[in-house]
Each structure stands twice: as C-alpha cells, then as structure tokens.
Length: 466
Image (tube, rainbow, N blue to C red; front, side):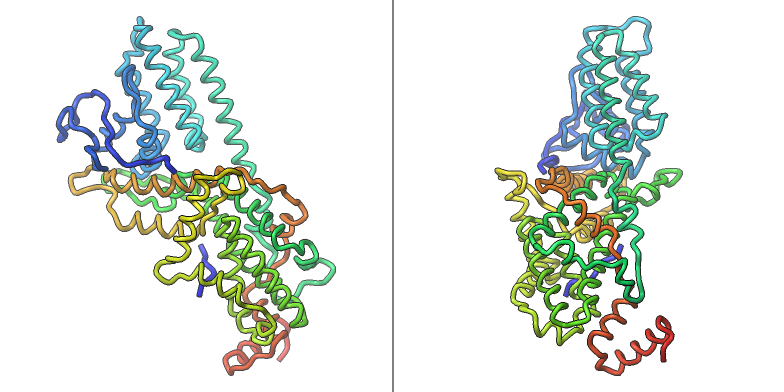
C-alpha cells in the first residue's frame, strides 16, 4: 500500500554542432561535440559551446541542459564570468575600435542568451556580482547599437520582477511548513471541520490543484540538481548549495501536511457514521484529483487514508463504499515501480500536449516519486567519465525529465481561488502521530495487545491517565 513519504519538448537529444573554435587538449579540432547521440566533452569545451559568436548560437536544448547541469561542476556566477570573459576575448571587445557590423550580429545573440538564462534560471542572478558581469559585457557592445542599452534595462527589470515574485512565497510558508500540531483534540472554539468549509469534492479538488500549482511555481529547475550536489572530484571546493533547495523541501512538507490533514479530519469526529462520511468525501475528492491530473494531492489523500490510525478503524470502514477507493489505490499501487501511475501520468501528459483548454493542460506529478527518479538517475551514472570529461549523455536525460516538469508547472490554474478553503488547507490544526493514534483508539477501542499497550502509554504520556 502507498505510504506517507517524507522528505517537454525542451530537450530533444540529438546532434549538436559546436561553434568554430580551436580544439581543447585531447579533443580533435572540428570533431562534433555530439555526433548523432549524446556524448561527453571537457568542461572547457562545453562552456565554449555555450558562448555565441557573430555566426553561431547554441541550440535551445543545449542551453537548458548545460545551464541546468553545469552547477555540479562550477557555480553559476563563475560560469557567467567565464562566458563574459570569452565573449570579450573572442570579439575583442577590449579594443578601442570595434568592428560595429560584426559586434551588432554578435550582440543580438548575446542578449538572446542572457534573456534565456535569466528567464529559466533567474536565481543565478541574485548576487550583485553576476549583474556586474552582465552589465559590463553589454556595456562594451552598447556603442555599436543604441538599442542594446534599453534592451538590457528591460531584461534586468523583468529579472528583478521575477525574483521579487519568487521571493514572496505562498501562504504555506506560515501554514504548511510550520503547522499547528496537536497531540489531543483541539478546543472546539479553534477547530472547524473541513466539511463545514467545503462540502463539494470537485471544489476541494480544484482548490488543492490551486495550492499545488502555486507551490510548484516557486520551484526552480536548478533545485533538482542542487538537491544532489556532491563534491566534484576535479574541483577544489564543494559548491555551497545547501540553502537553495528550500522550495523542494517545502513542497514535500506540504505533501506530508496534506496526508496528516486527511487523517486528522477522519479521526476527529466522535461518531463512526460521521467518520465514514468524511472518508467517502475524501475518496470523491481523490477521484476528482485524478480526473484533473493532480496526482500529488491524489497520492497524499490515499496515503492519509492508509495511515495506521485510519486504516485500523474497521467499524468505520465497514460503513464505507470502498469500491471507488480500491480503484484509486490500484492506480497508485507502488507495484512494478508504480507502473499503473506512470501509465496514467503518460496519459495526462499526452492530454496536456493536445489540450484545447487550460484545464486539460494540468499535469501535477507525484512529486516524491519524481525526486526519487532523478535521484537514481544521478546515482546510477557518473558525472564524469574516467578521462575527466563531463558525461553529457546523463545530463541530457536529466534535462529531459526536469524540462517536462518545468512545462507542467508553468500552466496557469484555470480554477478561481477560494481564500477561505485554501486558508483552511494551509492553517487548520492537525494531529501529531501520537494524537492520531489516541483519537483512533478513543473512536474504536484497541483490539490487539500491542494496541492496548500503546493506548495505555499514550493516555499516560498525553492525558496523564493510567
């Protein structure tokens, strides 16, 4: 059974032709970087391949793949510094007299690269030093075209707006990341049941989708790489990325909160008829999440209902029509590495590609499994080959997975937000694990000796009873 988990067309592998440049030691001049299939190259060669010239611009797939994976070997600010240095050196931008016609051709491509970089990886430009490198190189080409100054001003303005938006964060920074957790039932004066806030399963599924997409919006593609950064054996120091995966961690916390919220809402009512009603409500919500393509909320709901304090309520479950629940469980069954779920996900992804409405574009994957897939991809293949070259084939596959996720998370939510419901989802009190067991035992008495001993221990530690 599922368990509560704790913590695109963007990339099409193929032939990428390198810019005309001198060969790097150990690599033949004129040899294609990738000859029909993903290959490998030295870090210097890969950086050179990123740098535009008057007659060359890297493919979009390459830009995304390299900018995503390069942070395993070099910090973004250092990469930008090297790219800017190569631009100045190759275009002779430090000379008193410039070839204006050539610089204008180069300048347009440079601004395009910077636009793609700042749009996809805006957090790479949070430090002032990176902005300094950017404005320095653009300042050198500005005399050749009077529009460059205004274009880079607009680029920086858009960048600052994007960073400000990403820095605001959803309400969950207060609610879901630091939830109020009770070991006993909270006073009635501060607790409302979810069914009193929203009694329509489809509406709640829509609001859960709203929350999911809002939280996903803050996750940058670089966080998937930075979550698994290890010291590069050829680098002198380990990049400091420990503080740059906060949004991934917060999203996993939201999943766990939703699991506990579901279990809390089920265990809270005193009468089994009411508990059964809540279970059936959540089954309907889960089904609507499946239909929408919101697999993360679906899995959280199923996991919450499968938590031991809930699953042990046999008298309650006897009153539940479970056929729909078993169908949903089958869809999310972990057997065969979640084979059924992966089939459903592919179906939702195909629907998204051929969508005629924004509602059909929604694909919210089971996030913890996505992280697990990326983790095993990272662990299963070396970042560098024995000759020291970067294993670019690995990073093409990584970029393919992350790029697809980035496409999904950029979908605008078609459902209007209901602040009262989302506020409840973020801030409603939830039981701790001990609180769930205590409420469960109070609802249906413990049967086995193990349960009886646990109940006695909980009553003693929480309620002070023996």
